[in-house]
Amino acid sequence: MRNFDELSEREILALAISSEEEDRRIYLDFADGLHADYPASAQVFTDMAGEEDEHRRWLIDLYQQKFGEHIPLIKREHVRGFVQRKPIWQLQPLNLNAVRRQAEEMEYDAAQFYQRSASRSTDASIRKLLGDLAAAEVKHEHAAERIMKENLTENARAEEAESAKRMLVLRFIQPGLAGLMDGSVSTLAPVFAAAFATGNSWDAFLVGMAASIGAGISMGFAEALSDNGSLTGRGAPLLRGIVCGVMTTLGGIGHTLPFLIANFRIAFGVAVAVVIAELAIITWIRWKYMDTPPVSAAMQVGFGGVLVFATGILIGSG
Image (cartoon, rainbow, N blue to C red; front, top):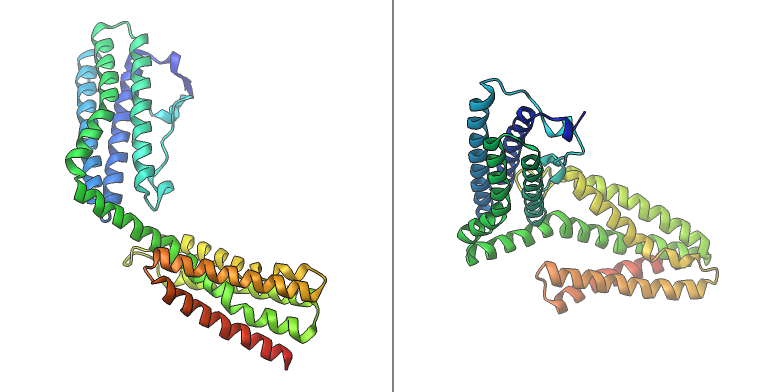
């Protein structure tokens, strides 16, 4: 790697050209990734890519005048201390706010690069262009705000907010809720059956841990393998599987941990209280994110919980 201070003016221009080309491709990647769910924001990044392409043309025109036709390949990763860009695959699935923040960082970094480069240049025309580009990058943020105002009308913003909520529900809330419900409800029967069959807290704890972890693994694989997200827009299957599996395990462990208490009666009472809290949380999530009326959600979740709870006690007592 080279130190920035060691670069010649020819190399600085070559680096600037490759950087503008890379930023343009990043903005086009953003536009492509956002097009399906956020078409207005996608147009914003398409327009910003166009501005980066214009900067690239200015740089190439000046380079040809000063140094000829051959442009050496110098990239950010060739220069020590230069800011690196995250590849698009590290941002998947694309989060609208994260993408906009990265775009702001890109413009700030570019402005700093041009200001520093202009201060080192002794050629008047190169210094002028680099200074103009630094000013352009500073203004680019305001241009981006202008472009967003033109494209992101109030209706477009409302549609994108609704789309963002839908993506949150599909990719995180839905698999997490399915896991939490399965972990909280399906493990009730084995845990309380073991508790009443043995009358021993430790035995109930071991059964509960086995049931919770086993259910988490099973639900995680089932969710990940059920849908690759290509048609439904539910996002990466691995991420959904992890969310579902973790929430399933947590749902079961919640009412299993009280059986670490040696006194069986106290452990049972605490476990029942935890179950009630779990069912209340599930009811709130169904009301908040799944548009289920609160009374209806409470009755559905409570009825299912009571049935499984009673099953466990009856089997354990028998």
